[in-house]
Image (cartoon, rainbow, N blue to C red):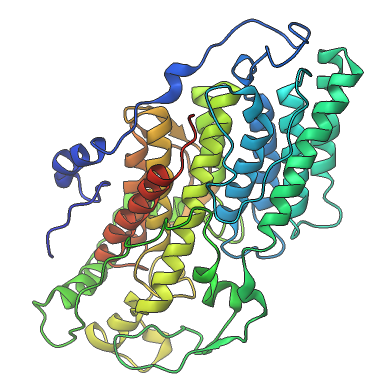
Length: 474
């Protein structure tokens, strides 16, 4: 295995040397900017004297919870849209409250084709949680089109929060003005979002190269649905965010057992034959299935919500973190899918069934612990997502943060005949989460180690590009 310099570690022995290189890229934590004043919504009603930093982030947590209810075990697939939902929701939230954040500036003019945003009225007061509620309600309504007709959670959350905020403000003019502004911002963001996927009308992609080393669908259907085949052609949120972020896999070699390519797949096979209970649990925890799970990368949204619950930032920092993390996650998704459909490297099941444990009988085929997604191996999607997500969080909250991921706590799962609670995982840094997510895909038998190592690396580079190209602070 060739040496790698990546900012998130897959094996513990690499941690000390690599993590230091990540820290050099960190911006100072913005948590120090938070001020938790005791003001309520009835004070300082004139002008913008009451800033977003004087309000809690409870409104953001409420909307994350609502979005999570629709993303969990959905009746209809939403593909790999989760990062897109988070990006546009985060930007809508940020733009709805940034007039109450004097040190920050609008992202209009910085993001890819983003339109000019509505303006607040000079000298008029706004209640920023009400602005946030209106923006998140409207953007969720516009984006989450896969929800069932009987699902009224958006309206229920919006109305419940509006009732509370109206009573808190005690001023009808401020309440209505705040609602109108937040909704106007979200409508602009939704119109912008609707133009990011011109490929939706393109002809379907039909695969033609089924030669050794090339990915081919396990169901043998060469017709690729557009949301998978062309997701890499989606307009990025940040111009240039995925430029020069992708590395290359090892050179194909199915003859020399000592070649890096052969050894990469051999390792997946060897691990699969000796999986420990904890390795199986990790693989199943971060599998994120369509049923009883958060598919398509949607699990990053409940993780983000738990981080807000545990760190409890004020509204300004929560909005900043939501926007930055979502933007990084969306663009990392685009970059990962673009690389997948360019490189088209085979999956472990293909190499193992053809070379390591050949068989023409499907009943005896080697099978991974978890199901293989319907696209190629390199780079690993979840590792790429995790690299971008955790790097963005680290630049906001710092690199020494303890948090608990209990996304699937309370859910029962059977491993080796034993039914257990999936439980929680404790972490002392966001990068440690990325490490677990990445290596879980190797344990699951669906990715090689190089695919997850370079996936994390690609995700971090994408988030670093976002950090370099977008200026939130004035």
